[in-house]
Amino acid sequence: MKVPITREGYANLKKEHENLLNVKRPKILKAIEEARGHGDLSENAEYDAAKEEFQFLQKKVAETEEMIKNSEIIDKRNGDFENVEFGCTVTLVNLDTDEEAEYRLVGPYESDINRGTISIASPLGRALMGKSVGDEVNFNAPGGQRTYEVVKIT
Image 1 (tube, one colour):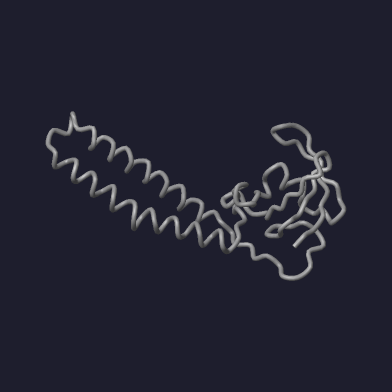
Image 2 (cartoon, rainbow, N blue to C red; image 1 turned 180 degrees about the vertical axis):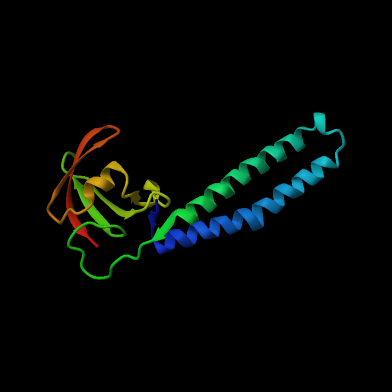
């Protein structure tokens, strides 16, 4: 199954993959070689730590490659957004607290609440899809039921 991703998100995944292969992997391999040079490998904590780090890196490389393989770039529309859809930015007002929040809807591989992006597969993301300005959105958050109003779609 293909996972939607923005063009920027895909580029970032590719960049991360390149960094893992061309920067981090050579550093870890060098650390393994240096640790090997310290003699007895059975009691060499540096060697064990470097090998463990290498195994973790290999797993991360495989995960990143899988994400790249499963990604489908979805280009966002330009112009007026009538309804919430993938790639748009939504301004919401929490109807319980009057707090305003702004989120960009992206795929699961690139969502990061700290950067203002949420996955279309998240509870809020799913609830927002297809909504219009003025619509109320109800969804279950980890802290309980929440109600937002869609104020702006860009």
